[in-house]
Amino acid sequence: MSTFNPEQVVHRPEFIRGDELSIPTLCLVQQDGTPYDGAELPVLEQAKALRIYQAMVRTRVLDERMLAAQRQGRLSFYMQSTGEEATTVGFAAALEDDDMIMAQYREQGALVYRGFSLDEFMNQLFSNELDYGKGRQMPIHYGSAKLHYMTISSPLATQIPQATGYAYGQKLAGYKRCTVAVFGEGAASEGDFHAALNMAAVLKVPVIFLCRNNGYAISTPSSEQFAADGIAPRALGYRMHAIRVDGNDLLAVYGAMMEARKLAVERNEPVLVETMSYRLAAHSSSDDPSGYRSKKEEAKWREKDPLSRFRNWLVAQQWWSLEQDEKLFADEREQVLRTLKEAEHRPVCRLDELITDVYDEPTPQLKQQLEALKAHIRKYPDAYPKTAGRLDHG
Image (cartoon, rainbow, N blue to C red):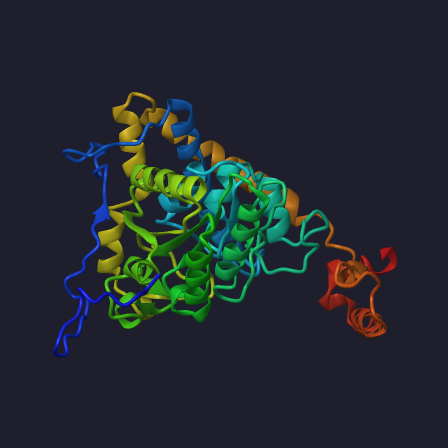
């Protein structure tokens, strides 16, 4: 609690800027897979390490193939996480399976690690009849109740205060669990970010705020977003624990999140984790990054590829080989393509489901709107071939 301390007074104006404050970055493993001198690596067993790497590979392949599908006109929209897999998979691997994840829209790696199947990914992307969201969401807006992964919301930063509230509920219920809110540094410019951190600090709730600082908020570089030293220092204004991590270093992300979870769960204290990475892909399939950054800049970061760094460490442990790596990529590409073809040919959701799950009973207005939509589709069936075929079945 802030109080007046008579022993800490001055008698002339003295302003504090915080220029002297610089938060260090946790780095454990170099690009060639060897640890830095003095690095304290977290304990990571072989089976879990391989599960993590396989999730990273699947995420990379899924992103590559689904962007290609979008370019072919088979998918309306997609967002890749290329270059950020160490963060998106590493943080999930450090959690317990029943810890809640409230993600932004680039955390498919966390879902892969928790066991979201390729079928489940594809059903959502193609909005077919097996999509959990019944075709109501844009592609990449995943959600899974069984995997404790809150459904993605399009409006920016809404999940941050929601995570604080959910974690407060976990605390009141006496659960030894935490909630993780994941967001980009651009989302940290929203007012929701500050409201969430302040509430979490005051109520002392088991929440981890994980900021993926990937350098750009769509086309706006971080240098034009804020003047301070990144996002991590903001936590200090709320008397909150903070740490900055090399987001391309899987072991650093994993180790930092393990410690952050201990603080959140054992002491009911919020933590801010900032991972420093780079968005190698475009912001989305609708974006062209060549308009705001150079190929030279991208090439510099490709040399820091998180997959190759972790793979090099696995090879150094004699847990993995380049031959196994080549086979894994080939197998994943085959599985992704096969699952894609199956999902895109499944029927779309029944049209009547468009207005269910909102009210206990659909309102007259919703029913009128649905009938108007059906009439429109019947009038122009060639423009809606899949949907038109479902009109007589609901």
